[in-house]
Image (cartoon, rainbow, N blue to C red):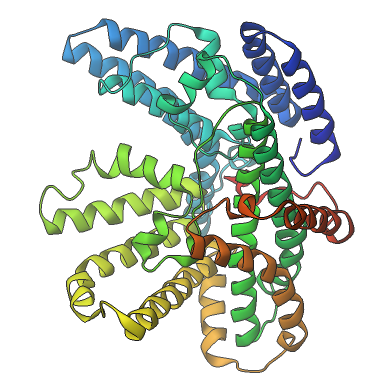
Length: 472
């Protein structure tokens, strides 16, 4: 059941109507049933994986809180790690490693059975396993007291707005909201409805339309020119942003309508002035998860400059692999790790060179944004490619083929698609307010809402195109 489908609109209308009429305790049970039903609409067989993560981490957290023996506590947290990472590792990476092994042994006349190469990836598994694992790690560190209410914890793991593609919530934020009675309000409905509308616009009008240009260049066997590669990569940068942030907006919007406040997952990422700044703005729930549960435990920046650089690279490598079982994602993670390392090495020099005020400072800021954006786009080329062979082919094309190709026909439609998103983000950046539209006069807001609704109905691609991050 996709957010951008009529089925979800009907589903949410029924869920909301019943939720509004029920008392608090019944509301939690109703949301849990709705969340399981939402996930079962993808494939009911994989509900068992959510139940295993829920049961194991609920029990582990209680044992951790009741046990003072360090050795025993390590055994319990190890159980949580093994179960969650074992489930994730098998379903997400077993096929990848089996395929890599098959390629390795094929020249010697050996083969791997087909069933070993065809492991189905359960939707959302990367998100809910990290969310559940983060809970037990927080309890293990003494940063959180475990809940004894199994219903609350089960809803925390399976809450349907963010179950499939995040944000990856922390128990310290969401569990307390689940345990506390939620109050419906016109303010929450207004804010939630705006997020849903804006998210649907970004997904169905912008992202799904941009995909046509992207697919024309990145399809296997496509013959593209250098300028076409450049334009398609720009298009993909906005496609993946509008697709993923559109999902997050709809998730946050549906939750807000129900009285819940999910964390912000994107903060104007293409206004970043450095690679490190980009990761403070892009997929914030994952980048902070990797920081808190991987980078800092590895030693962070506390063990000298050399170890810091190694930790950065390892964190980004694993962050890349989190996105998918493919060498392109490993290469993408390595690329971003290299960017962070280079930035850290050059930062003292850049700080000395940066103007502090005046026109020169504004030009430096603009150059930093444009430079960072193009570095990020080069990474998107790696991310979007089917395999490393295509990465090499596209990079070669980029610097050897200069025919205009179809770009003359693409500039105007791409500009028209991107312009509304870019205009809104410029307004948000200038006002330092991601909800700047709520400060507009009512007629201006009404006109914006009508225009977005009209665009979705008339220009939106057919409802039902999957979100990109569902494959992760």
